[in-house]
Amino acid sequence: MSLLDRTFTTMGVEARLILADRAPGADPSTRLAHAATDAQQLLHELDAKWTRFDDDSPLNRLSRDPRTTVPVADDHLRALVRAGAYAGRVSGGLVDVTLGHDVHDAGYADHWDGSRAVPIDVALAAAPPRAVAAPDPRARWQALATDNDRKTINKPQGVRLDSGGVGKGLAADLVAQRLTGLRYVVDVGGDLALGHGGGGAHHVDVIHPLTHRTAHTFRLGTGGVATSGIHRRVWVDRFGDPAHHLLDPATQRPAWTGLLSATAVGRTALEAEVLAKTAYLRGPRGARRTLAALGGVLIHEDGRVEPIPALRLAVRRAANREPAAA
Image 1 (cartoon, one colour):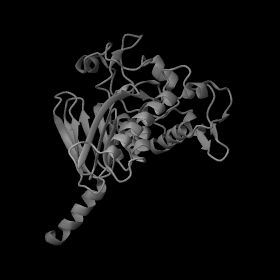
Image 2 (cartoon, helix red, strand yellow):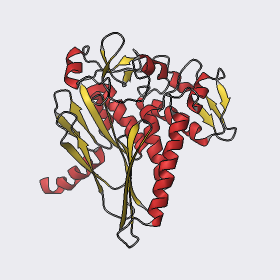
Image 3 (tube, rainbow, N blue to C red):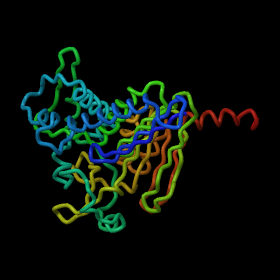
Image 4 (spheres, helix red, strand yellow):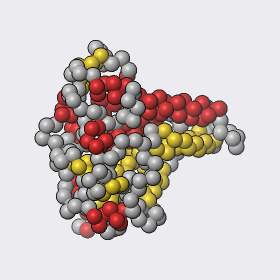
């Protein structure tokens, strides 16, 4: 089996492609090399289209357009807006891509380079009382819609759209769609799309943000895994308060919910991303409900690791035990 493992920077994060096929030879096959080059080019194209850090990006031009219905020929930009509407629906408004101005005002105005990082223990000690997040009552994300026949996007006025984690999950899925027949891992800043290519399950390690050791391992053949957390990007904002990029839509301020991170399994990387962020924003109790269907893992502020078993797996195990118990 030929193997290719390529790492590069895109969307302000580290991306990694691990591709395998059954072609003979020790070196990566021509098919893998072409697939990796195509995937890398697609990710760079999506970065240029979806970034909010370039004033002239198509996403920012869309945000500035005063119209509520805008002609947009680009399929990828329409796909991002559809993903934003999906994220709002699935999360009950907690994952809100219309908060671009608020994320900028919180201090996340450019790609994160770590130069302003504050140690997580210092940030937690100075953070406000813990509280679960709530949706913005304006629910501006509900105005997001696309029409592929007319090639238009509907959007609310006066908002700045932020691709954020939704864009990374969607990007991983768009790359995965081009890798049919291969065994692959597409990792876009921690949002993973997985395909087994006829092989066995992948082992996905969740690294503990405090100890930097493996906290939990998932076995998954196909689907997605994503982690949403505050430990990688913490800074001091213009008010002198610790801040991060996961905002409470109701207050437009960083959400401190009692969790360091939430990792979710999904049928796609986009679904996993939305579930992970929703879980973090809902705090420990709400996170358990959010992750119950497909599984995940929570890491609490005190470092405690809490695996959340998938409901379908738990039901199957319970069913298997019942005859013996009887």
